[in-house]
Image 1 (cartoon, rainbow, N blue to C red):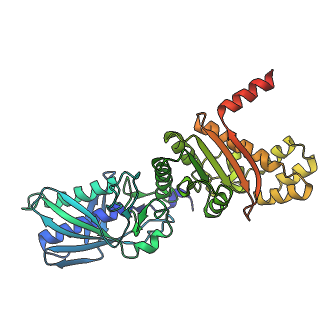
Image 2: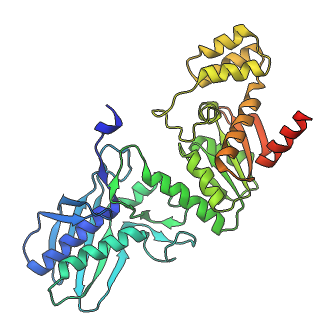
Image 3: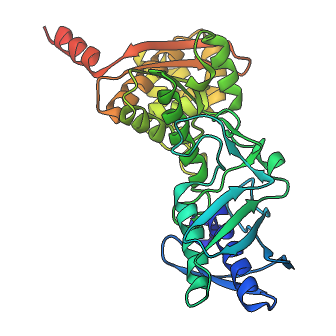
Length: 373
């Protein structure tokens, strides 16, 4: 199946806005709402099925089940629930209920102590309710968004480290979840770097996953936990955001698989989007004096891990340092600034295999001048 055939889904923000709109309609019409047409932030109109639809005095409770499409999203199947009470005041007051995180740290563009409902979903929820109130005697509403089971879902996110406690965030800038774009994860990478900056860090450690992050924390125990950011496949996003947030030093920690892709100039390293270039790795091996028969073996290796095993057997472990140097150089080029970049390669047990420290374009230029003298 290709990416074009994969099914799009909807964000938690879009589902919350639909649920809130349905609740407002239920209060105004007094009739069960089985489905609701809503306008997404990208102006697309979508018809959502309404799961829960209940009147409780002056309050209505409606819910929409999130369909994330074919995106591997931990909130797929979540029940976005809106409890709405209409008011005469000209304002929409948004609250977070069970399963929606509370903001406990500054730096996220959200009020500390308030619900983790991002600005675009806030606007969308408000607009959808106001659309229903047109021509009615009501001018505003009190809205509580909740997500049953949100606390458990949040354990699969970076929320707690970002100071988002007690549930998930209500997210989405377009209303649409693109399959395998993992837009929410990309947004969390940006947010995490902004948070590190807000709390005074000028250094971030970008890791490719939970395992490499744990190893990075062991290698760099003096850095604040907020400096460690899992970028997954989004190394390019991590680098560009670090530049934007004026970080002075970026440290990349990973294993040979992802690092060899970065050495190949790939800044989006999803395994479906790029494969390890063993031809490149064999050329790197030749550059450090590996004999032709070993270089040929490297070129025909099954995986990057296999390449490492071949090099170890033949005693050419220096390839790890050379890969780190090329990664630092490529990431520096991607940054387009003189921000310092370091790269550490670890093995699958966390042992340091190779490193390149404090590379910058100034250093590269100085080296080039020296080499040409």
